[in-house]
Image 1 (cartoon, rainbow over the protein chains, first blue to last red):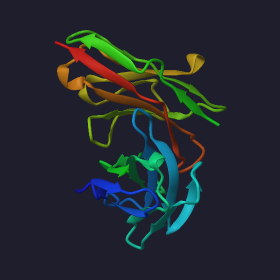
Image 2: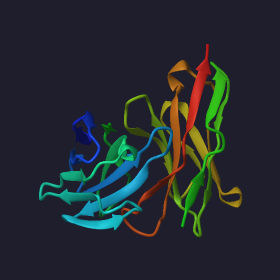
Image 3: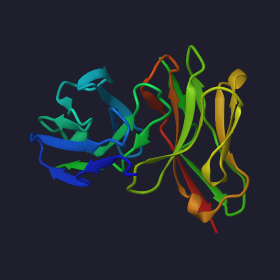
Length: 113
Length: 115
């Protein structure tokens, strides 16, 4: 049973560019949450998607946006990249009803130069 | 708003020694609590969790944690450290207010194990 799959694993972008990160949730999960983990810090909640809608959002600017598809997979988009956006981006999936825990992917390491 | 505090950023122990990683939470209601481990260049792996019931929780790899409401703590312990335990450890809290609340993480503690 595949867990959470994220792609790509590593990415290098230039300031001002746009980036899209992808996440496929664990089989049976219908909710996807995104977290940003800066170097030496704990993960910070970006937002959560369920039924193709953003359900919760953390303290992140509008440059961060997302999408969830009918098959429950999700994308995280970041526009106008800043050096400070360099981080590990983690996707976590869960089941909205009958919640029992989150499963995290291995993350996408984004470097902005 | 809830918060999670992990005192100290680095803990070093000898192989075979006791591991104690501290976690305190601040929340208006006792949250669900979790410990995650992260190996270099990898995602988060759940070690154990406390939701309700027994306050002493056993997890994978010989780790356990005890929820102490009076101390607002959820410290992680392992009786005997192994070299493979060297990693980053995160404590996290989740408001028990409904499905899929967001996780609030501490800053993490790096565990080093000396031969």
